Structure formats: C-alpha cells, structure tokens
Image (tube, rainbow, N blue to C red):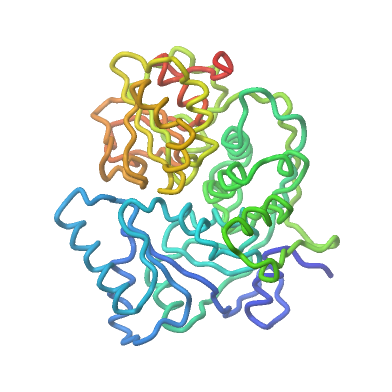
Length: 417
C-alpha cells in the first residue's frame, strides 16, 4: 500500500512505517521562533536547563520591527542575548518576514521536517517540506530533545486545472478554494496540490498558496518539487545532492481527491470577518476603502511588487487613501529598488515601510481607526487582526489591492491590466 507525502516524511523521521492516524515521535530538522513567540521559547529552555540545542534553530524579529514600544524592545534584547549565548542565527530588524527570510537562507529542504512557532509555517510546503506551526512550549521541547510527537494527518489531494484567466493570481485561486472548502474544511489534514495550474505557477505563487493552507485548517500543504523548486534552491546555494524530492506513491490513499477548474473564475475577495467569506470582486465594486496594504508572508514578494508597480505606472493613489507597502525581506526590497519598483510605488503616493509583519498583525505601521475599511494582501481578516476590532478587513490579490488604492473603492484589477 502506497504512502502520501506526509506519511513518507514522518515515516522517514520516525524510523517507522507510518500511516494516517498513527502517532509517532519524530526527529525535527529545523525550528524557529519569531518575536511574538520567542520569549516563551526562551523561558521554557531556561526552565528545562538546556545547555545545548538539539535541533537547528533560528529566530526572526519581524512582527514588531523596528520595535514600537519599550516592552517589545525588552523581548528583542532577550532574543539577541539568547542567540549570542547559544550561537544560533538571528534575523534582526529589517531582515524581513520569517516565512520569506528562512526559505531565502537555503535552510529548508524537500522532505525535511520543520516546526515553527508561527501558524503560517506551512508556507515551506512550497519547497516540499513537512512544515507546521506549533506552540512555543512544544517548540522548546523539540529544541531540548531534537524530537517531538506527531499524529500523521490524512491527506486531501487538490487538483487545479484550466487556463488561468486574466487578472487572476495565486491569491485568487487559494481564496476560491477556501471559499469552496470552508475555513475548517481541512482541519488537521495535509494538502497535496497538483495539476497543470500548479505546474505553471512560479515559486512566489506556490508560496502564497501553501501559506494559506492553514486557513482551511490544514496541518501542512505540499507543492510538487520540480525544476522550478530545484532552481530556487540552487540559487540559494543548496547543493544538488541535498535536494531529495519526496512524492506520493501512485497507490497512496487519500481521504479525498478534489478537482478545481479555475478557467472561469474572476478576481476574488474575502469579506470581513472570516477568510472563507469570499465573493467575486465584481460584487463589491461600490465598496469604499480607507487603507490598502501590500505585503505580508502571503504576498509581499518580488512578483507581487512587480504587479503593483505595473498597475501603478504613471498613476496616483486616490485622495485620502493610505497605501502601505512592506516588502517581505531586505533582499526583495533591494531587488525592487534595482528594478525601479519602489520608485514607482513611492511616486504614486504609497508609503514603503521596513520589511516585516507590523501592519498585518496590527502592532504598528498602519493600525486602522474605528470603522475604517482596509483591503490587504494578508491571509487573515478576523476582528482585531490589524490592531483594531472595530475596523473591517478585506483580503485580495496584490493586483486587486493596488487597483483599489487607485480608485478608493474595491476595484476589479482587470481594467488596469
């Protein structure tokens, strides 16, 4: 009987032949924390009396970077001291969002088992890793022992086919899928994406879709490891012999196989206050907006900035509109500068802030006022997500967000493409 990708990776890391529903203790290849979760990790490591970490580990200062308060500055100082004490990597202020800088570092390999003290750790499934978010205490246990326990998830196979319509991007595709599955439609499941549409997506698009599998409740979301994946890894100095793709067996058993033909979909928008409350952009054409945000671990990558700059060329954002842009990493910021993208964004009236998560999680750099409406490229829109429970957050692709910034109302981006 064949195995799914999740079953294969967890079997390899446990030394046992595992199937969906089995429990096992598995060796962890890599773990990380960010500044919203690392303080607890550090405290637990101290309580356990750990002198040497048993798992490759790094920390990222991204959720509140630069620090917006004295309390956060204390956390950042604690992280720097811990990193120096244990001689572990720290991505400090300005490096960027954990789910961008870690893949950029070349530390995530196909077939690896990754734990992150952040719910969107599933992003690394775009590289063929079993990567999932855990609590800070669970992550500390992995650092102390090199292992953790897992329940092997059942797997849903999602086949995406059809021709990608004009104005539709990876974000629209994953929002459409979440609309169909529901926010709890894949709870504690693994997702295997495949099909001709997935094959055509660039790596930025694959990261976007893997990132949002947790918004279906999934434990992990895998993309195929192909020539594009290998090129991404080789460009980050990953040796060829370390790249060992894991694929499902032909006779693997899935909980469900679902097909989506996206040939006729239009740009999608998630309405407040749940990510599966999705509709066509055309249904919201008269909705006025106060703030647009382009960035996050979902859509702050170079291709996203290119789309925005292409739409904004020689245009201005609407009067009274706030358009905030946060590149996902310093490397992306520098590439965008070289390509003239930042110049285009700033001349249009956008405000470019330091690479990081601030506006998305509501710590700083764009907290909306009571009653304000925001359209964002983020992955979540529940009440208070951007720092104010009395605001209204819509989610959309970089193209839709940028088009909306120009008009001041939720806008179909196809008119600018």
